[in-house]
Image (cartoon, rainbow, N blue to C red):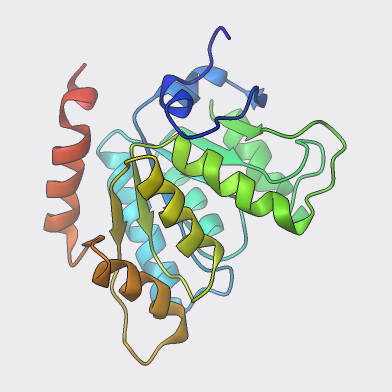
Length: 215
């Protein structure tokens, strides 16, 4: 349809339509998905804020699931840095979850971003819909940054969807003794690019988004 994000169209079995609160044009901007643990460690929260800010300063739009933990921290940091943001919900747009983030989601819309779902209004965000939501998050984005992820976890699943869609996966390494790092470290072992510093992040952004950001 008109305004349907071209990148999303390229994934296996794209959603037939999207429901949007805010500006649908945001969904077609060069975007980085940021995903991570709901029970983020202080290190994870720190990294989420750091790289969301750097991505925003590079001119990227940020896509998150708006969950507790890493998603919320990345969303706030990107907002504070003036980025456009797309938050993808698992249920209907009027069934925002988690409820304590309704103010944050409103801020995203007020700042020219969008809150999106591929589900009908009034549909409760039941567990299986979170997996479907992850497909939309990765589908809207040119690359995925996994900040913290256990095994198994939604973020680890999101990385599988990103790979299926041919999108680069970046992961922030963590201590091998930390459960929250097990998924991110495993992704690196499987071939994801380890983001070992700001310089490497900048190189990867340049490699993936370079021409898109100059347009």
